[in-house]
Image (cartoon, rainbow, N blue to C red; front, side):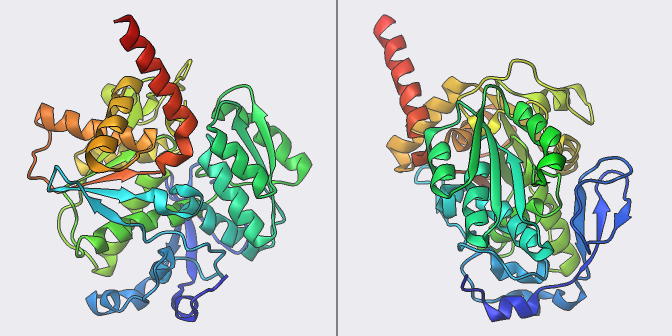
Length: 401
């Protein structure tokens, strides 16, 4: 797949897997799921001594994908479609706001990063069948990377996911099942059938490597800002692996001596129709409760009980950030605002984050002088049917007003 030989040479050996909850240690010689002691998510740990210092940092491979950070990724031949190294776009109206455009990834969303790494390691371990419950975009990304690797993919998604997600899964040759329910219902089906069917479950945080792909967003945003932290990062949070991965990346970069200073405030953004982490944050709880009757047109945020909720809450609190929710109306208004004034078609998830920025400026939590990175986690064009539904609903309301 056009792998850079320098990247392969610089890849570190995995030292071990460490449970993010109880610190139990396992080796990485065979595929692992979650901690056998407490069911916590595993973090991949490396011996990073070879990559310490600014001299090494400044000599990173000239590779325009996430594999430029091969020094902090597993030593396996990548299954890559040139994911990562996405652009940062400066807002035309807000001089200190940068939009990290994850819609530029293969399959149009940030999910490409995590699934590239998960499928890379699946092929490395010799796995033949992968399964995933998905709110939409992870399914499309798994389908693409599994096709590139010659691995069988089984995808379970709610039947009302955006049409683009359904089309791409079948186009890549995956086995797709649409479920009358939420992603939690899809996860239950995978859990019930995986042993019988011989599937390896690559659900969010139920294998160690999707977070490794997502952490590259943290390396990128810091490098793209001149190896400095921004003051705040806004991240649309359903499963939350991107935020979790970035927090891990910041710790690694500090260990390596690649960045100094205060880490950014992490702002996790949910939808008001599915806000389990927001409610947990406001209660002062360490974990969330399953959100009942979840509903939002931002399908990527419709995750009633994130598996890594304790990691999201830990990162937000350690950073001095917060968790905030936006309504579908506020999300739609931000889609319209950024389309008309910035020439950028946001995904509904990304628009939740831009709406949250406006709200936190108005509240005084942030100042206009604060340097901020907002993540648009997917291309708005993948949501044309969803955005059209929003537009029709708002026209109808206007006609009766």
